[in-house]
Structure formats: C-alpha cells, structure tokens
Image 1: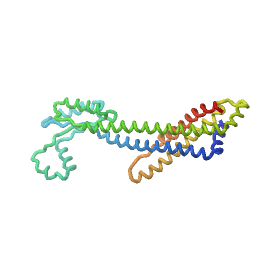
Image 2: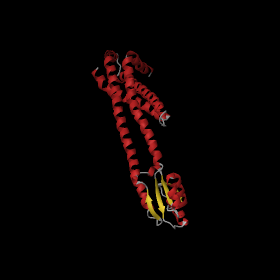
Image 3: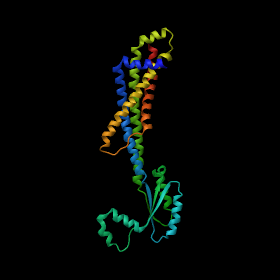
Image 4: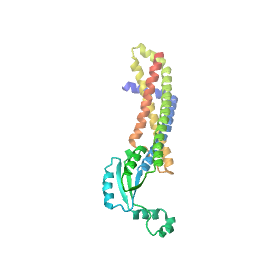
Length: 284
C-alpha cells in the first residue's frame, strides 16, 4: 500500500502542471455544482419555512356553541395530517385585522357589530403539505355542520409544491452534468498519465507485475485528485458564501455535507480512473 501511495504521489511531481490543471478543473466543476447545491439548500429551507405556515382555515357559523367547537377541535387534532388547531374568536380576529390594517381604523370604528367570524386555523405536518393532502383535509373539514367556509389557498399550495419539484429536478440535472464533466476530465488526465508511462509499464510487465498492481497507483491518483478537487470546491464555495452572506442571510453546508462533497469528488475520481485505466492499459 505504501508503494502504491508513493507511486500515486510521484505522479504529481512528475507532471505538476497536468496534475494542477486536473485538480483545479475538477474543483471548478464541483464548485459550480456545489454552488448550485448551496442555492438549492437555502431555497429548500426557505420553502420549508414557508411550508410550515400551510394551514386550512375553517370559518365558524355565528351562534355555534363553544362546546361544539371544542369537541370538533379534539377530533381534528386526531387527524394524522394535523399538527395544531388554533381557535380564533371573532374578537381576536378583529384585533388582528386592526393591527395588520391600521389604514382602515376609521372603517373599523364605524362597525356597530363585529362582522368577522370566529375560525379554526388548522396547521398541517410537513409530510402532508402536498396539494392532495391539503385538499383532502379541507374536504373533511367542510363536513362539519358549523363550517361556514373553508379556505386553504389551493393555488398557493400548488405553486409551493411545484417550486420544490422544479428545484429538485434542476439540481439533479446540473449535478449530473458537472459530475459527467468531472469524470471526463479525470479520465483524460489518467489516460495521458498511462500513455506517458507506457515504457515504464512495459518494463513492469516484463518483470512479472500484474495488471492489478500496475492499475492500483492510477486509481489512487484519480481518487486523490477527486478529493483535492472536492476540497478546492468547498473552499471556493465558502468564499462565495462569505461574500454573499454580507448582503443576504444564508446558511452554509454542515460538516457532513461538506465531507459528502469531498467523498463524492473522490468517488468520481476513482470511477473515472477505473474506466480510463481499464480501457487504455490494454493498448500499452
């Protein structure tokens, strides 16, 4: 193993320019993918924060006894989709309206009676915020005799769900494209290394070296280049994050996610090396 690692590191000394070019190219490719991943991460967190406010509002018929509403709240809280039910009285609804719409204070003061109804604000679990689940809960709530109206912003919920789906698909496409580019780059550098060391490989075969023994340093070299590219990508990504975070409040990758990027780069380098060495070693 020490011999394999030494031979792999020796390749960096033999061709420093080529090694530097391959590492930086891999790093920039993973940087662009990681940068989009960081944007997607913050977008998902923002969408999740918005999604936590997804709720169904049941407007209660006037004159409905509080006891009836209390029993209904207990039943609604037992729904698997529901995480919380809040009863808002007509007086509380008016206080909210006056606080949120101060420009209409004159209009509110002219009302002899409170025109706003009491309501139940039904908040849903994060797993049940898709349009189908929200619609299902709203339809069940409409079955209560005191439900004068049920609102849940169906268009808004559908757009939120669509944004999540679009960001996920775009992330997969961009990540896949740059992963493929990284594999091609590493494979090309490994192929060049194999061709440049063709005489050395021929001598090793003459003295009885097996293909697996010859192949091993190239595989380790590809894995090291991929790991270095991943670390470079994280460094560039953090620099971009620091610059942007001065203007916008954002979050960076956590430690497991940063390690995952480096491991992903290593895996890409290893995979590219396996393909390239297996293909070109036969021609040497």
